[in-house]
Each structure stands twice: as C-alpha cells, then as structure tokens.
Amino acid sequence: MLTINLDGKVINIMGINFKILVINKLFDENNKVLGFSDYANSLIKLEDNQDDQNKLQTLVHEITHIILWNTGYDDLNANEQLIVAFGNVLYQVLKDNDLIEIINHK
Ligand SMILES: [Zn+2]
Image (cartoon, rainbow, N blue to C red; front, top):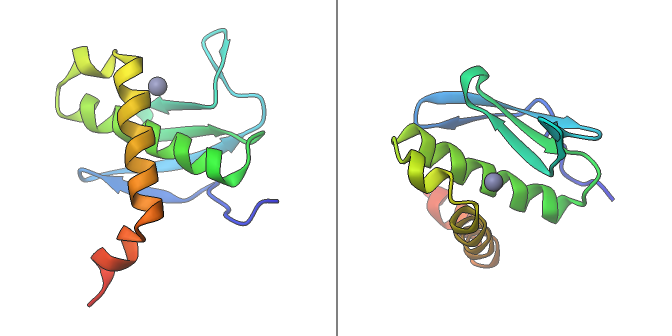
C-alpha cells in the first residue's frame, strides 16, 4: 500500500528545514491526530495509519499551518476550518495538474 516513504525526509519551508516523522498512534497533547507540526523543533509528524493520499493531504495541511505560523498570522493559523479548506484545495490543485513537474520543467 505504501508507495511513498516520507519518514525522515526534509522539506525546506521559508528557509527552515522541517524533518518529517511518520509515527504510529500520533497524539497532540491528549488528542489523536493525523498530523502535527512542532514549530520549535522543526518537525512535521504524520500518523502512519493512513494511506498515501491521506498522508500527502495531511502533509500539505501541516505545511499550510507552518506558512501561516512563520509569517506571523497566528489568528489565521488557529482557524482550523480555514486550514482544512485551503490545504485540501491546494493538495487537489497540485496533484491533479502535475504542477510540481510543470514548475520544475527546464
Ligand atoms: Zn490543523
């Protein structure tokens, strides 16, 4: 089922290298979550018990959190409904239009 191994990968978001950790039974405080961003330690944690498309959607969701946090929009970053909507639409647009390949085309 797993075709993409995200565990240990590092992604640069606005000059900060965030390491992805794929974790079985991920909790944020006492709540079970699919993803969690640890801003202070530059970590993106993803629940392992989800398929690839949900892992990637969760990753885009966490990237959205990090962008708003790192640009000082703490009030928007606390608006989970906004993050879910924006992140899920961004994931869909990136995926369905092969935008990464287009952007990287030389
Ligand atoms: Zn969130």
